[in-house]
Length: 131
Length: 135
Image (cartoon, rainbow over all chains, first blue to last red; front, side, top):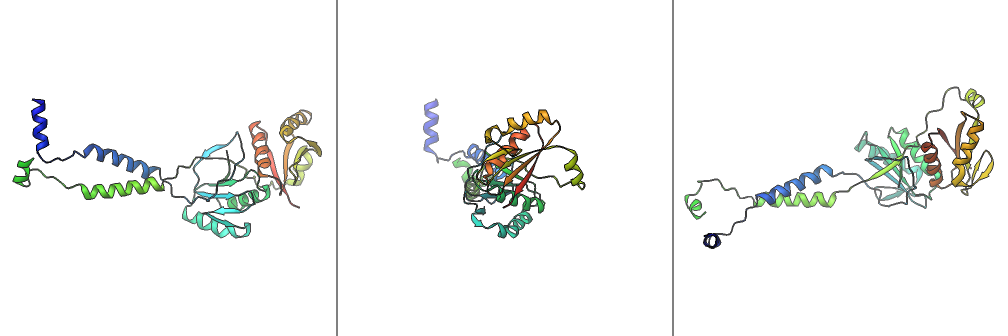
């Protein structure tokens, strides 16, 4: 009986039931839409200092400072005097988003502190990234 | 199946192929652009200076921790190993209870000392004030 029915199905048009696959694809799609964050990554990955009292956050504005004290925003290096308009533009794009400074462990403390003060002045809740 | 086709419209059979194409393209787009950020950070925002700063400085004793431009640490002008700064400060605090801690960091010192010391003081529940020394 089973054999006969299988044969008869194969003889007809082969048409896959795509409903389960569609379900899975939709769930994946919605998952990726919900979790996607469109933020401008600095483009470098500094070796961040270690800390124990750090808290997790989802940044909206990312600034990285390399070992050579270059300030990277959106894959472009800047000088300390040039970053104010760049950060202002980022803030206007994404107001209320917290900011994060990824300072290399061996970058100069003065630069990190200046960027932090600048971002705080612009009303961005800023933290310094740690490992 | 054959029968349904022959009757034509007996049961609505929507052609889902174009929609599937679009859904797949969207799916691939979102997979490719997805960035999973897992960031952790500490807050080094400085509170605004109190209006009567001069009076405060005189009334409360302070312990100053200094990291110079060559990453050498000192506590109250005495040289100390950077890893043992917090211990030294704690023993000084026993003598001067309620003293405020001023973390003076030279602008050329490494960020890791600024962050590391601030983090260690925060971990011990000690309030510290960051000052950047220029020069």
